[in-house]
Image (cartoon, rainbow, N blue to C red; front, side, top):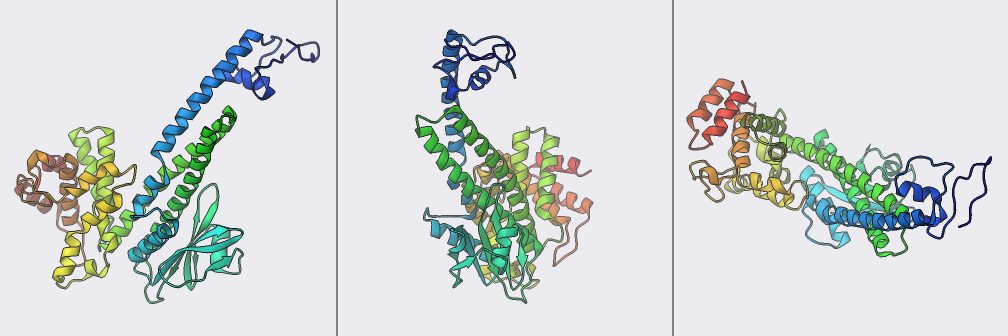
Length: 418
């Protein structure tokens, strides 16, 4: 084995045919030998062991990457908006249609960056086919600055921490002022969407590296760092989306306070009184935030009207939880809350909907959400009535414990609000 030239009389490293990318430092760190080794040579046997260790490390990295890919994908992260096809144009049009419906605006368009221009990817009506990316238009300016623009049109940038992908353009009647809660919802959709697309591209790159027998440990470590960063961002953006969606639902439902958040917070307190574990408590908290999610797809006037609703309007409101369940079904980190939302309208005596479940057969989370929701609704101002005093609300719930609500949950609720 040939020794390297000495520096000031001290021999640092020796070369061998087993060196990784001919870099002795990479061999050292593969064995976690420390930040610096001096005076000692790497023997032939040690170099062989290091090379073997690196091969094992590569296999371990590939397994880690495969596991990450199996959990996080475009399919799991984007189904939040109820996509029913894999065709790209249909996906973007579905997003645009969802935004239009939620905000009750005239039109919505989605533009994506390609070859230095913003091209139309999905739309709900006629629109410009492309924009040059510069600050001469609201569309180009929003893309470049990563800030929403409010002019004749509303432009929300689609970006993540890594790059900018496009914009969401909203056409709105000047007389129909959009509530800021809805804009925040669109902004969270845009960031979530952009992060999901970027994650999918990174997953595609990862699969290529996994299939390439010449990929190095360094290549795999680099792509793993990108994947984990994107997944961390995605989790944050998903939670932000849930919060903004809950706020928008409350606005559309005519609540003057954050009903969804109050329900979720009370549900969490009930869980604490009952001694439930952290994971179950978190799932029930999310279910509390999202239990009225179906309302986002219904016209706001249906909830703010003080007049009598038509039979068709009443049916739509009664079925809103089913819409919400459809929206949530395929979101990877929220799929477990679906049963809690599905059965929240069941009654403890078995006379509820949709299955007529009774007593302990109703998911515990559903029983907690139902009680928390009822209490928060009774003690909040609505367009058609004032809030009920706390003691009166508790009296009503205790009186109907065993018929509408689980007596154990009602007792825990009573303790939680003291």
